[in-house]
Amino acid sequence: MNTHRRTFIKQTCKVAGGLAIAGAFPSCMYLEEKQELKISLAQWSLHKAFFSNKISALDFPGIAKTQFGFEAVEYVNQFFKDKAKDNQFLKDLKQRCSDHGVKSILIMIDGEGDLADGDSTQRNQAIENHYKWVEAAKYLECQAIRVNLHGGATADEWKKASQESLSKLTEFASKHGINILAENHGGFSSNAQMLSGVVKETHKKNCGTLADFNNFCVRREKGDLWASPCVDWYDRYKGMEELLPYAKGISVKSMDFDAEGNETSIDYYKMLQLVKKSGYSGYMGIEYEGERLSEEDGIRATKKLVEKALAALK
Image 1 (cartoon, rainbow, N blue to C red):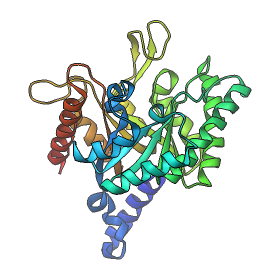
Image 2 (cartoon, rainbow, N blue to C red; image 1 turned 120 degrees about the vertical axis):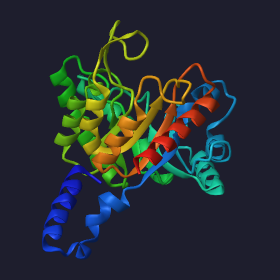
Image 3 (cartoon, helix red, strand yellow; image 1 turned 180 degrees about the vertical axis):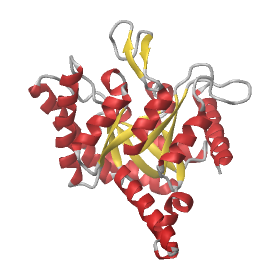
């Protein structure tokens, strides 16, 4: 549900309530009764196993269901980078999902060029590189692809390039019934006010955010995206509040846990309260990225905490 629909529902409910005929407006019960928060497993949670070839992309749906109890999955194209147009692979992956009763939610796209590149030639090539993943997502019956808005030497350059890329991508994706989700994923994109502004100004119904609990590092020590220590953090709770009105996906990131099972750097109860308050309804992808626990234990710990926190909010 987008921010405009949420506002409409609230306004309608107020009118209906004043007229004492709320029963005539089923939507008035949506935020109270129809909001449904479900969890999926992000493929990145098992990135070490994938990169070491211990498991393959085709194994993922079965592992998600049989080992962890998930009924929905989120893919990362890095683990089948050359398969976007491989009809047999996509058919096999779709069949694996069907066999295990697993729903495909989205594909996270990396390594296809910088969508906020200041060079229009490079940027347009990056846009075209994403088209095949839109088509693959459609075939797998996903709802969306997640994109990175990397690039841009200045904030203004980043905004302009990002809006142009999102406009072109959403126009193409709309023909396939696919959403384009921009994630707070390093650099200018981790400034939630800027990212939400760019998505809003796109004015496309199939454009939204994938709000990540943890990716709010705006600037690192050496100017890279990932390797060096972060020296400029955007407030994660303020950031989530700004991204959630446009969210069509959520990444429930986790790094480590204390003895009580709480995430050591993220207040899940506060985060999920923000999610609930926003009216967001849909899947939230669990993405364990820590080092202390094994990937398997990290996934289970994250799932347990999410379920505990959601139960506390009821």
